[in-house]
Length: 418
Image 1 (tube, rainbow, N blue to C red):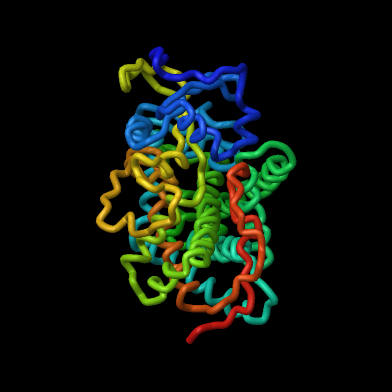
Image 2: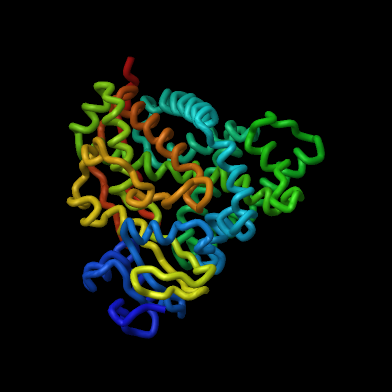
């Protein structure tokens, strides 16, 4: 599979080390070996681990890798599930991905951002009467209510809290083992039952969501074989519009933390510097940990850097390590939005949500929506409210996947600004 000059980590299996070390597992070994590729064994399987822009270009070549049997079963079940767009290849993937992209164009993103802003204003109006607010918790609820409205799903306050808790558990339990994952899998079953009922109602004519809403489009979508999706997969894909939007709460929480730790950034944003706001959000996405890595199995033999990668080879691309790669970013451990000034994104250097082409490959279809939602929230926190940040534990554990500031980012003494 690999030439002799690719380092191989010794030992029978390193799964426990991965669980213990979290985001630093791959970067620490790249640094130790002094190379951007090495082999190891995880979950009793040999893996080729890679990082960097060239590795991302190799990994995201359309038709080169499949995600099937390339991720831990619990991770796949919680974040995408079997039969979803991520687990498809070839024409089946292309057709399903086109459905996602058709719903995430500029006008659709603008509508979603507007709905989120309305939810923000409704929630923030209550904050001056509260002793404190946990930003991450509130943001998840805001985004859940907004995305359900955007998708054409009627939802009341109590149901919004239930759905938010379910989506939050799926995200939080996707890369762990034990009770956190068991709870998430149990809640996911409840979510899928709810989503299947929505799909059934549309198909039976009992519900009539807007024609161009996600609920209607998913319920009536036909796959590459010309047949409608079965109700299970339709429900899964509906969830795959909702849950990732709730996950954007992590980027927004990190952005609020960044404004606290770098007051000069907040001042420039509050002054209305829109170009700087874009750079700030991109730096948040680069600097703070989101997805640690992504796996793929080679669909056919191919050559890369003098090595023959055989069909079936398991390859792990270090997303976090690429976003923190010193050869790409120079001073990756420094939060510096200005690095994005006049920088052209190749599609393979900044990859917190994957790399390559959004239409042909497996890059997250909601990446542009993520940027829009974070920018809107940051603008609101910088110009719409005044608040204090009390003493709290703002440390970010790189051992926990996915991670957050330990406190969830608490603010208090909130006042609305004119």
